Amino acid sequence: MTFSDDEIERYARHLVLAELGGPGQQRLKAARVGLIGLGGVGAPAALYLAAAGVGILRLIDDDTVALSNLQRQILFTGADTGRPKVEVGAAALGALNPHVRIEPVAERLTGANAAVLIAGCDLVLDGTDDFATRFAVNAACVAAGVPLVSGALGRWSGQIAVFEGRPCYRCLVPEVPPEAETCARAGVVGALAGVVGAMAALEAVKLITGAGTPLSGRLLLYDGLAGTARTVTLPADPACPVCGGGPQSAAGEPAATATGATPSRGR
Image (tube, rainbow, N blue to C red; front, side, top):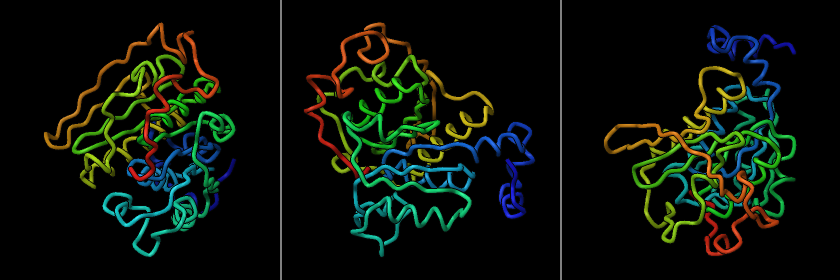
């Protein structure tokens, strides 16, 4: 795989990195990343992945741009309100880096279609904020053997984790929390989305290129108010219904709890 003169200049700061260099940039160019949700986490992550030169970005989101998104979802502008996020995102990312192929998918990911929507992806980045979708993404990634980067945020704090087989996301969150919050209800400071989205993109770049040590099996917790971060190790749950041999519904969602989650798209 060769690079054009434009690509060599565009990725010059990557190419001189010992941990990345030409081979790493080639891996980025050859990769297809599935990005679930173009919200607070997904929007900045998409910008950095496109800028980094990921060969194919599959954008999966059925939502439209709302005025309340613009405080943190920097992929969009006021002129985009009412338009499909994947349509706007595809145009913006293509303008940012014409060497990246964008696959816009204006569908809501569910347990029923998750396997089809992530098919062919080398990595999935989940930026959604409802647990039914997170559970469906996780189950599909475990079944397909695809690494999953998961990012979440709310109020002043955020978290990033990487899942490769075991433990999986359901080991971390076995059931939907009884009082699960969304950004629409609890609020979120806009700049936090940039922090978490960029960190999620960084983990994706590390996984694709083999640079450094990814957060596999670990959870990074960031406190924006205190300006602190800590990392905890995630144990695999032997009773996990997804990766531990426990019962699992056909949709890849918990049989009793997923129906109680309210789908959210804005983040």
